[in-house]
Amino acid sequence: MKDAIRTTATRVGRLGRLALVLALAAPVGASAQGGDFTAQTRDAFRIFDNLYYIGVDLVSAYLVTTSEGLIVIDTLFAASSDTLLDNIRAVGFDPDDVEYIFVSHGHGDHAQGAPLLKEATGARVGMTAEDWDMTGQTRDMVMTDGQTVTLGDTTFTFYVTPGHTPGVLSMAFPVRDGERTHNAFMFGGMGLNFSGVDRTEMYIDSVRRVRQMDGIEVNVTNHEGAGQIFARADRLADRATGDPHPFVDPDGFYAWLDTLEANAQVKLKEERATAN
Ligand SMILES: [Zn+2]
Image 1 (cartoon, rainbow, N blue to C red):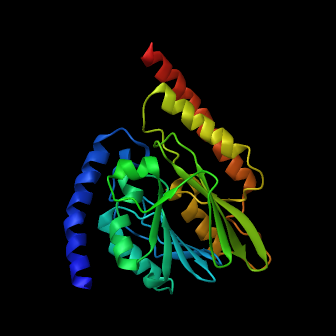
Image 2 (image 1 turned 90 degrees about the horizontal axis):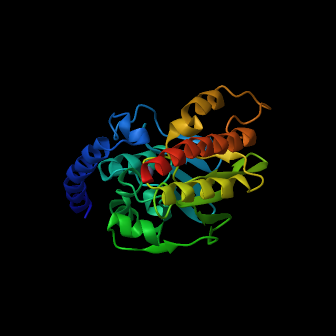
Image 3 (image 1 turned 135 degrees about the horizontal axis):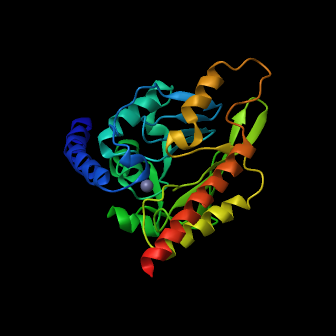
């Protein structure tokens, strides 16, 4: 059975590289920087008591632990599926205990590994209807705005925040640092690699909507650079007892949203100029 999975992984791996070539041909944020979307120069690491980074260098994936099993956020390119599973084991957990996999949006770097990871873990996979359609994958859980999913002691709340793709899925969930619990948020699609006035307005509406949510303290980004995940991890490693947690940065989160909106406003002007 495991061999069968590996064979599938190899086959899809080639498709993954094809998708990567196509992605690199497009003028897109992280993809335009080029680079190896399977490279992982950092070991998987713990961020909060219940949150781990299990992604690669250019694309994030996260593991959330609960009292009743595990949740994975994002699935990387299919070529990285074995890496993601190894990262779960490396931080001390069993992929068989993954109950849910939530995919932030349908682009290959976040969604392509979903079928393989579903097969390997037996987990349910959640994506919005729009982005299920984008991937061409067989639908599993169709995530909707305002939906909550509870696993053991942990509840995720979902928001559909379109723009980057037609069905970007954002999510809020608690992270724990000893006695303290903080509100973490993943804004599911931040890149401006799309076109059209309508889509850009949609993106701006989504950013503004999240901007109006109170109390978000931790920015869990699906590309590490956007949230300085690795830089904060360095500071976390040097944290002394009693120091603040370097990932708890509400001002940074809201300032980041302002930057996203400012960049999108520039794009909106360009899109309108092109449309006229
Ligand atoms: Zn994307």
